[in-house]
Image 1 (tube, rainbow, N blue to C red):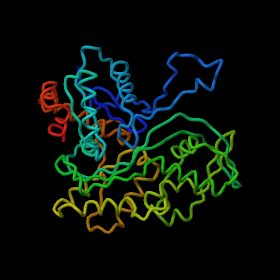
Image 2: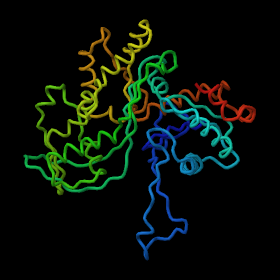
Image 3: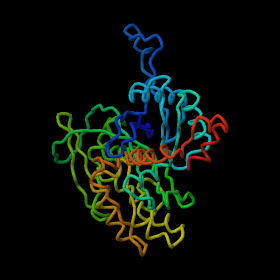
Image 4: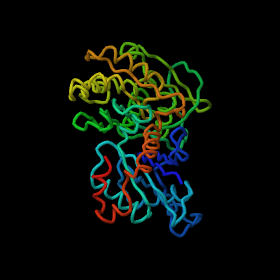
Length: 383
């Protein structure tokens, strides 16, 4: 049986057997709904039957361990077909700067509750590089997840073109230099700004220009996923007058659709006193040894849903040509044999590649290792 690979994000969980040239077999929402224990339909009392939403993972880290156990139980036994008493090996992806206590709780849960035979964990920044055939480089991750969709109306006083809706949400963003498979944590930068923050920005911008609009945050997320894009440069952004419209229930949006992408290059739009993402990348790498600068900058990998925004890669490359560094950041393209939309689950693919190495070569945590040392063994064997 192939080892299982699990990448748990704030909004999406990716899981599947370790087959690197295939997409994960399961991509499901991380968010759960807790139903009434008696299973009642609520026909007689709708207020009591409302589902309670539970978020096992917040900003990339597990916050509700009971819910996480329920989620993994579904993934492993129902989704991946594991059998009780015949559990296999598993590799988890770690967000940048995962607290030690979280890693220990996870390995304890897997050995003591799920009775796995082997465990390994590796940082997402490293795994995303493995996915494109690199062991050194810089990972720029601006994550997102997907949620359910509903529709409201929005009206503006401008000409329109007719289009349709889709959806999004969030995780945190980070820049992480990696040298020979090891994250340079001193140089890494994690931002508590993810898709949800950009969604709120879009909502604020629409609210300013249309004070009478009543649109839910869920609908704003859908608009962001479908229509947000990056202007060619800052000057082009200032001149944007693009329009969007939703069929039947009309939505008209002006330059707001460019605001989400622009905020990544001009954080002042979010009220932040910070440099744009390319300059942040260059400054991050400037803190490591100068002999590694070229290797890191010329092997930059974009991942996460937001980086697939229309125009983002072109804008990133244009800003790279204008940055303060003598060595310009250069993006690495994934191999042609890799699954499409690799940026959406590159950490999972990298995990599948790594699983093909650590488990056959017995570099993982075994049940005997765990029984001898306890949860702290994860810090010695998983790095």
